[in-house]
Length: 458
Image (cartoon, rainbow, N blue to C red):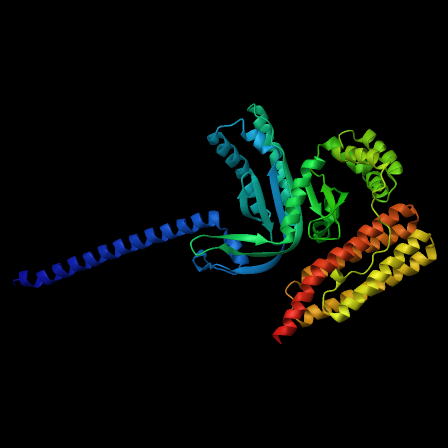
């Protein structure tokens, strides 16, 4: 039987199948190569525009970014900068400058990421980073950065290079994230007075010769401030705000001997600062000199000693410990809340007056009334937030809780009778009046704008 003519079609079919298989393999290889290219492109874009930044804007892909995209978030802003970088860079060639910067920044970037932060931008030798989850992430990240810097400097010393010093400022608050620019060139950015204050705090580290400063807004945002070594440092006025902001130092990264000395003198140091701000530089100077004897390397204590020497003959002194008048800037536009704010401020002033007079029974009554007024106000605000689905309810409630915690601690100070009235008046101003002014003009004003927009929309 002749099988020749019957085998030819099978052979042709096999060849066709092989050609199809080859074509499929080529298509699959090309598809895989395209996917690898796309993946590497996404990774490359991610180095310039972090995916986390896009997620905060509720954008899935960089191809979906449009000019004017924006979102409002509450987060902690970090500014970090190398001290005397200009002087340092003048001793290096351009290539050495870039090698040094990349060597340093490559040490810091992973620590920010591991603490749930994202780097918004590099500004020369400076880093601006955002921590969208908690202020504890930012503080822990900053402490880790300073720890890594110490290791990095050990390597520089062994190689014969000058150690590097940095300053870090942290501030928590509301920010606007978005895209700015034009059709041909746009950039992601963050806009807020919270950003400006973080930058200001970083600059202040140069003056105080301490590497890590945070605002009272950051302090009140911490879940448990006792986990860190913190002390009050100063009150500063920020451009655009009439109320000062309290500044605090975190000294966890100090050399062990200095850290222990600061811990041992912290209460005396903060008492000295209270006397200084309450117009008693003579008493402040005595305590500061005692602090310096225990901690000779405490640069901040020396700064305040110099201030006290200048102030002994000065008439331009702070007017703390006095009642605070109601201001139009405290109004948020919600009649019920504005009225309760007035009651709360009045209660704070009554407590301060009682402390000035030293009447223990009057102090206890005023503190009890103030606690009740705060509870009523906070309950009203939280009910309104719940009714109108305020997106930052939990953050706002956290601020209320922290005020309650600090006020409870302050009430214990009032009743134990161990502090004199000058220190108590200063603490009252920080814990009550400064908190009221800043909370009302920041968080409560934001709530007021939101409630107004909801009413307008309806």
